[in-house]
Picture 1 (tube, rainbow, N blue to C red):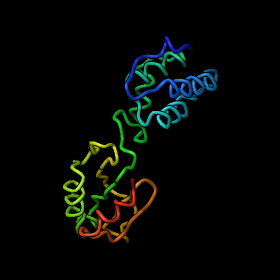
Picture 2 (tube, helix red, strand yellow):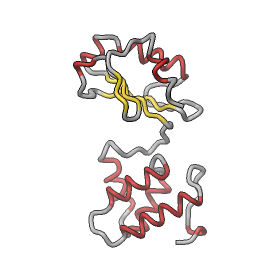
Picture 3 (tube, one colour):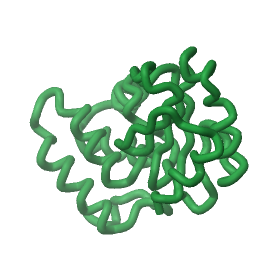
Picture 4 (cartoon, rainbow, N blue to C red):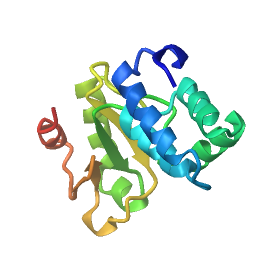
Length: 164
C-alpha cells in the first residue's frame, strides 16, 4: 500500500502507517491472524481508531464488522486513546472496604482525571476494575505492570509521581 492509500488520522504518523503495513503484509495469508494483527497495530498506535479498523479489514480482506466484532469482544483492545501509563484501581470488596475510594479521589483531584478517562497531557489513563486478584494486598493499584498493595490514600500521588 502507498502513503496515498492511508486514511488521515491525527494520531497515526507515516512511520506508524509503514509499521502497520508491515504487520498486515506479514499476516495477510495467515488464517486466524486477526487477533495478533489487532494487538500489534494497537501496540503501534496505542489504540484502535475506526480508520485503523477499516484499514486492517481492507488489508486482511475481511469485513469491517468482523474485525470490529473481534476487537470489541476482547477487553485488551481499546477504541479510545490511552495515556502513557495505565492506572488500574481495584474496586473489589476487599479494596473498597480498605479505602480505595479515597485513593481514587486523590488521583482524580491531583491529575484532573475521572475514572475511564485520560489526563489532558496524556500521562495517565485511570480505570476502575472489579478485581485484580490480589485481595490479600488490598487496597491495590496497578500502574502499567507494577502492582502496589496496601495503598494509602495520602501516599498514592507520591507513588504515581515516579511515572513520567
